[in-house]
Image 1 (cartoon, rainbow, N blue to C red):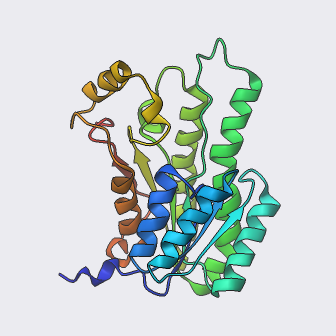
Image 2 (image 1 turned 120 degrees about the vertical axis):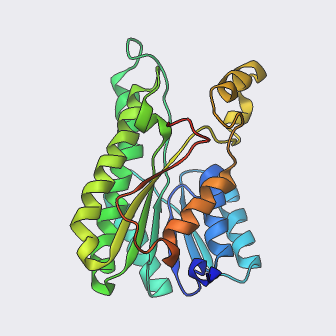
Length: 252
């Protein structure tokens, strides 16, 4: 068996929401595997530029672009600018996402719409923007980041669960549309992952969550990123329409 199948040398990857947390780890791991990386971010240029700096230290090229994931025209521009700079776009990772958690009795229409637009419409925006150029080259890997909540549901997250379940249905349908052009579309459904956001939770809440995980611990962003590199690489050449749970067993 050759580990060369995980080599992404000469590839270009676009990661939405790539400035922090899981997205940052994905961007860095794709670069470590050999890819040049374009990452989008919503607000923190400092965090995004730090990711770019780290990637360039690896000897790869990188670019950070501030973009509204909900805006289709901006998605098209990010994709066209990426292809103009790097001459190809081989890997798309749709990672941008937000939460607005509350019980549906208290949930406002704005909280519902914000989550659906950011988490689900952004996947449509960037996937549609990359399909034509990927079809021209008859190659590509699209990896959409869903959630175990999109598989199993969770009280207080009807908006988030709907958006993440929608990503799964979208991905399976798109995979069937583009498989004949050698474009693969897969989903990663992370469970409870340690990030800056989850690090702010009360210690008792953390222990309660971890007790529900069969592996009895939170996952790390790197463990999601490793799965992305696998799905982006030739090692996953016969995988499309798959949902890979990186969740410590929560989705069983």
